[in-house]
Length: 135
Image (tube, rainbow, N blue to C red; front, side, top):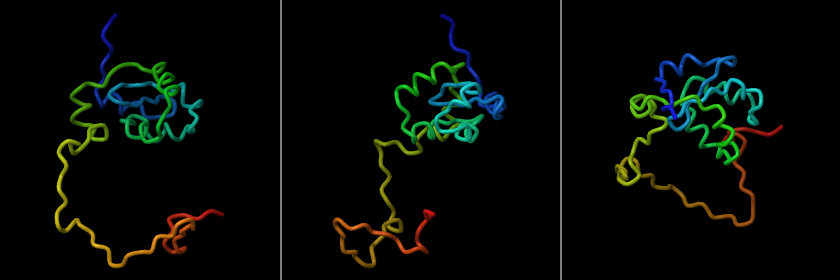
């Protein structure tokens, strides 16, 4: 079996339109152009990550094993290792989980007042503090 084809990040970036849509997930390059119209999350979801690393987006949604199986159909190669590790911070954690960074004194927040917990009651922020409203 032949080694997978490798692509650099610049090559992936060129494929960023609905008619030519590549993405990178966990260092693998996928041509999802033909899947765009079938994507359960909508075409716009893929359009937003076209030509770039979509690893964080893919993982944040919590795709199923079935989704991972479907993805294999669109695999076209690997991202060059140098691009994956040095140019795609989205895929690489910025701090090692084994060496936590202690907070500075200025980063410690001291509460001004202690709220009384409300068990069994819905807590709703006042309208001016809400991020969105339902019509």
